[in-house]
Image 1 (cartoon, rainbow, N blue to C red):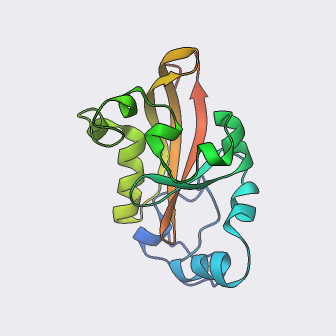
Image 2: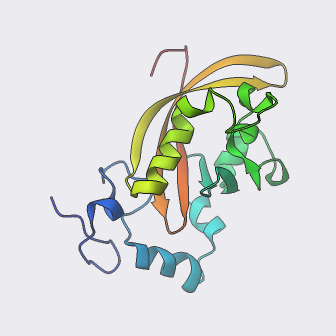
Length: 173
């Protein structure tokens, strides 16, 4: 099946289109139209992601959260100043990010499904859809594993990370 950009209708390469179109975070857009939408047409990134119906986090190639939508802030029960320009593990209160090596520096980080999905999407352009992930949570008044399904999609120079489902009880995903 050939994938076409939803704006210009040009055929998209597998790297641009991702591997699935029915569960994408946004409509399939080629790189050129993606840039045009966000930067040249005056649609602010925040407006775009706030319209998406799930918790969304905009992540750069260093695993730093650059933005989140209103549902993302609500999901974390945090304000923008608690999220923006912070590493993903710190934002999500990963127990391993509190170790001396910090987020991304521990032996555990190499196996993190969230981190691996974001980096895979950066490197290949391929979307990751409903990837099972376990977060070793260590936050206020609570700690333990949080199981979830996540999806990633590249949009220009950032990756959109969507929280599809939090699985309770543990192992329900």
